[in-house]
Each structure stands twice: as structure tokens, then as C-alpha cells.
Amino acid sequence: MRMRWLGGMLIGLAVCCYAMAAQDNQPELEWCLDHLPDRHDYPDDGLPYGPTVDFMQEVARRAGIRLRFSPNTPFARCLRQMERGTTDVMIRLNGSPERERFMYMIPVDYAREEVLLLRKDSPDVKSILELLSLNLIVIRSYTYNADTVKTLATHRKTIKMDSQDSGLQLLLKGRGDALISTVEIARNRIRSNPFYHGQFKFASVSFDLTEPRFVHLGLSRASPHAHLHQRLADAVQSIIADDLINHYFHQLPSGQTQLETQREAQP
Image 1: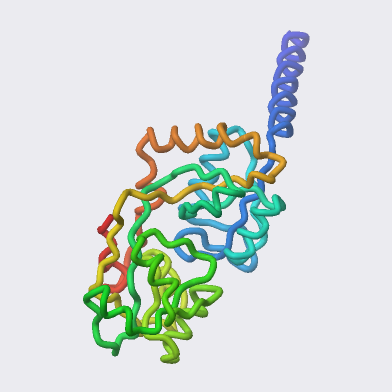
Image 2: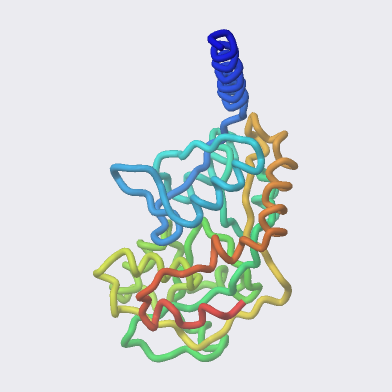
């Protein structure tokens, strides 16, 4: 009996050691991310959390890799690090030829159209033609989806800012007339800063997508783990096949204001 018990312990220990060794052999990729409230909150004194974090951890589990969080890093800096290969992956990226030059772009979800954000006391904007007389604020590091927005982003009255927050602040000061954004990013930034509450509204103008576009998981082509491209793509595809994208990306928090829910259902 004692020998049988000892034999069972040795087998259990061997299995445990094998599992630990297998985990140690898993490649570890760094995810470069910032603080995006309601999606991947990044507290000053803790680890990131939120639905995007849950999604990335599920991708890692299915791909057989380990995920390491970067420090809280501004979006534009993450892109530069991806180009150099000093970080490995990013999530929820719009596609562009420039980004595809230094990243493998793995489609994750359909992209949403952009919106026009105004100060609450500004007159509504209902047509594209009205935009030509406005000082438009765009974010320098963003890739916009709608062809109209791409054209507007180059017109002579465009003001380029480095972040969504700096754009919102410029808009509040009246140094720009409108900010081109997405519902999700605008909503999250406004929710996270009480100073922004009740200060903005969405314009009626619509930026239609001429063809379906996607948001992506990006893997740096200069990363030492670039060879894992297909493994990550297969993991993402299995999540899509299991119909879990809506669970991770479109379950919105409760208690939203009218500004936060307006036009959210549009593709």
C-alpha cells in the first residue's frame, strides 16, 4: 500500500513538472496598450482589466502563448514600438497600407463609421459640405475608415492633435469647431473625465463606409515572435467561429447617457 501511494505521488509530481515545463516553453508576447476606459482600464496601481483584456487572454490561451502587459503606453508610441519590433502585439487597429508594412493585420471585428463631435452649444452639422467651412480636429496617429473622413483630414482647415484628450480640450476651448472620432472612443473618454460630462454632442452628419472594413489584432513583423502569425490568426478565427466577438466587444456598461448610446447600433 505504501509503495502504491508513493508511486501515485511520483506520477502526480511528474505530471505537475511536465505541465510547468510546458508552460515555461510557451512564447511570451508583449501587448502594448494604454488606458481606454470600459475596454481596457489600466489603473496606476494594478494590472489592466476589462473586456479587451479578457479577449486577449482568450487569444493567448487558444494560441498557446503567454501574454505580458506593457506599461501604460500612449497609442502613438505603441505604433512606433511595433514598427521597431520592441513590442509584439496591439489590438483594435484600423487597417492601412502603412500599418501593413510593419504589422501582420489579423481581422477581428467589423469597423464602425466615424462620427463628428461638437460642443453642446454649437449648431448642428447635417451635411458633408458644411464641414468644409469648419476647423476640424483629427488625431494624428489614427487611421480613419470612411473615405470622406480621409479626404477631410487633409483639407486646409484640419488641426492635428496627438491624442483624443488633447483634441477634446482644444474643442472645449473653441480653438476647433468639431472633432472627428468614433462613438466608442469618444464615449469612453467622456465617461472617464467628469469635466467632459454634458459638454459635447454628436452631429447629424453621417460618414458612410463605402465597403466593409475591419479592426485588427496587429503583430509586429519585426517581433522575434513574428512567426506566430498563423497561430494567432487561427486563435482569433476560432473565437469568431464560436460567436464570441459580440461578448467581448459589444457588451456595453450600464448607466450610459444619451450621448454615450446615440448611434451606437449603427454598423
